[in-house]
Image (cartoon, rainbow over all chains, first blue to last red; front, side):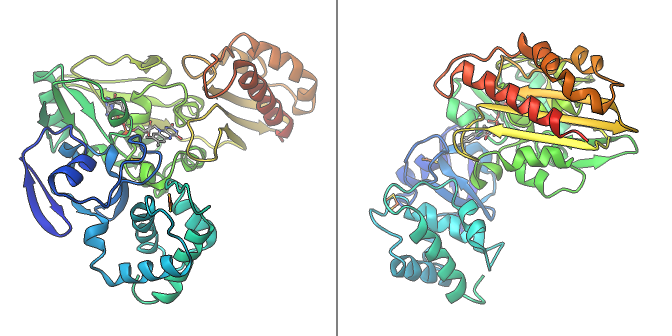
Amino acid sequence: MINFFLNEENVQIDCDPSFRLLDILRDKFQLMGPKEGCGEGECGACAVIIDGKLINSCLVAMGSLNNSKVITIEGYSKTDRYKVLERTFAEAGAVQCGFCTPGMIMAAEALLSVNANPTVEDIREAISGNLCRCTGYNMIINAIKLAAEQGVGLW
Amino acid sequence: MVGLYPKYLEEAVEMKYAHKEAKLYAGGTDWMVRHAECNQLLFLNQIQELKVINEDTDNIYIGSGCTYFELLNNDLVPEILKEAIRGIAAPAIKNIGTIGGNICNASPAGDTLPILYALGAKVEVISVDKNKIFPIEDFILGVRKLLLNDTEILKRIIIQKHEFSNTYYQKVGARKSQALSKASFVGLANIQEGKLVDLRIAFGSVASTIIRVKQIEEKYIDINIKELPSHIGEIKADYDSYIIPIDDQRSTASYRKAVCMNLLEDFLRKLK
Ligand SMILES: Cc1cc2nc3c(=O)[nH]c(=O)nc-3n(C[C@H](O)[C@H](O)[C@H](O)COP(=O)(O)OP(=O)(O)OC[C@H]3O[C@@H](n4cnc5c(N)ncnc54)[C@H](O)[C@@H]3O)c2cc1C
Ligand code: FES
Ligand code: FES
């Protein structure tokens, strides 16, 4: 039995310890925010936050999770921080098809939680593992910069 | 598939002894991509002893389970190793990928390897009844081949404390951080009273293992630094037969070789 915390709730699951967290999130918990882009750690569409760190859920075996705290975009969307990012992503035109957006938001949170006032360079580095086929990144960078400005005190 | 979850190193080696066919899982960033078939998976990621970084008067000891970010945030880790780590992948990989996994993956493109070879790093391997320490170049035998039997685990990396007056590292890849390196080069040197007293050179991604040739390094010890430029052609020729990159989709062999030779020359010309 694998015990962990999913969006603040203690959950147990009996599964093969080599199964990918990404598949368990989508198939067993119906959390569709994390997406499979590449399945090889290259695109960040499946990114979640585990124990405060940005991690690609396609690279996580369930057996490595023992007691970890996993936050997906679904859990994060209940926070005030998310509301700011949601607004600034819309304002900056940072969402087109939306496939990369959950991963981008998780990457933004992982950055802002340790660096509330990031430079453009910091933001670029923070989202360097998240691919977007649509926007060309500048809008996303602006959105995160705006969130840092509008969300003063939240991070 | 059965999972094994040791909390202590002692427990881990006992489990490995009892379950010799179990595969080891550290950060999983290589393991999950390769999906190796196995019946038992031994998870190393809960073992705090593998995350320790400490020192004594002569050496720095780095636990095999340290992630890239843990290494970047530690003052004992040599700056030249940090420089290579900064160039590895994106944050989500740096958060879980470990130095032990990078070594045990035994890929000639592993970015910490040229640095560890140049620093003369040793590895400490542990099993139920033995601790063995030997040079990293004796541990890595070839692509995905290690001198590690099915009861052993890599415990830590041992790096002798050593100052260098000249350090040089370059990784040439398709994109700055993401791609596995196409070619990488590290040069370390000490110059005293105008003489070259210590020289270490290592190349990554240019053969089936990292290339470091101590005979060539020794040949140029004690040479006057002013005379070095006149030896550059000779030094490049010395390395010529060792740099035998294979053609693959990442880069052509001749391009890689040219890059390596240019980096070698650039390092030598900048020595002061
Ligand atoms: C998107 C992406 C980008 C990457 N970019 C780079 C890059 O730029 N440069 C680079 O060098 N690498 C890169 N890698 C490869 C990988 O992240 C690194 O090699 C990493 O250090 C592997 O560590 P890990 O802990 O994840 O290894 P794991 O996948 O857990 O293990 C790798 C291998 O080592 C064995 N092993 C692990 N720990 C031990 C131990 N203590 N004792 C014995 N055997 C052990 C495992 O059994 C397995 O065979 C990248 C990978 C991905 C997915
Ligand atoms: S699907 Fe996980 S990083 Fe692309
Ligand atoms: S908005 Fe389409 S991939 Fe980013």
